[in-house]
Image (cartoon, rainbow, N blue to C red):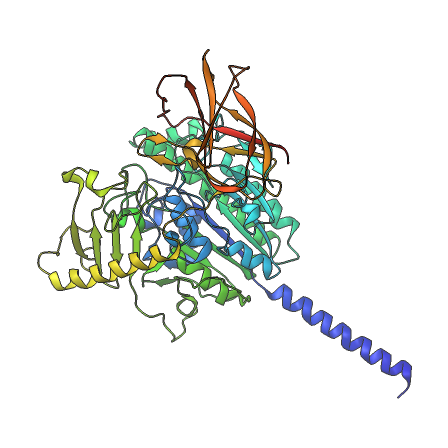
Length: 571
């Protein structure tokens, strides 16, 4: 054989291998995950709601796979933490939804980081709610492109002033003035992202803030439902959900037009039950409650290339199961720093004989940064469900919950009583003791992970040049008193601190850092500020106005008053 012939053979072999590699990459399924906010089990037509118009979601459920017993946390940030990590949110640094309780530790590996590391291009559009500051922003946690609002919702502090129409958003960390209705804007961004990355595998996370309050939607759209004898809040929610359905149809059409639908895993779910009282498919309770109405939500999936049409999964699955399921479904290598709590249900999706083992699912969340045992908690087993002091979400301490709302221990047979109407605790003490023991072991286990410590906000050269410390979203509280922010300063740094509060004559700007309090004279009363040298350390940074000889006054409303901007000046 000649040298030329040998080189040609080697070249051809190389081309074959290269083509094989490209084909293998092309065979990787895309993943699109759509999650709405405060859309309950009954907020789709297929669950018995004959008023709301959700034709696309209804057909998607019929033609795909519906998880009929799917669970999430009763409020939003905890659900998002578990969805992104495959772990119980108490392990991640997230405690609840605001006042320092919605920041996720950066050593948690997110779904976005896993897909990015596997060669996917990753994008988020909508609501993140796991940290607005470095190093907890979506762009710090695996998303290569982000178009999001801050805080837990558009118009919530610090996202004020803002509106669902033409909202101010943040694209890759920079403010942008969007045009149009927020849900349309988020889907527009996602569809453009899909178009731009159609030749490589992508992971797209569309997390709408609708139909979360404030209930802002086109007037003609909600009055259509008002004419069907729905109260104003329900009419507005239904109009917001109908808009989501319309945008979901646009998403599916885009995938069809690009010939990507067959090899794209599309998932639809919601983050908790409805915030307002309305039809909920016969389930008891709503958002913030660990009754079924707060944690049992719609969930559908399609992957035409791999999954059968028109199937249901009736075993109990949860938000934390999606990450291990997608790892198995896509075949990506997952270098995980922590053990997962979720269990893959990929065998059930594909009709395999290998079935996930039966297990208990655990739910709990309430205000405050110090979770208490048996406080608004539940254990959901294969058949029975234990409920502990439901309805106490708004109180930090269970002892402060009024007795009529402290429901104690309840037991329900979900197989016979999905509406949770008959309490069996008194007649089945052995089952109660068994599930209580499981709960107590779980609570001790999740507490041992981080001892419920939330991660600090980092201030320094490697962080953001300007850091907004939001009192409502990230402040540290004792009761209703705001006492600053937990921050980390890796190296000494000179900063300009400016307080969002108008000072009165005679007041001074008080800055506390690492236990040292310094008083600064104020030259600009409408915009009080000072240059401060922050020494290296981790602890509480507190800033307030005070008149000498007078007690400190605390701001008690949920506004942006009292927020602080920290701008870096230098070393």
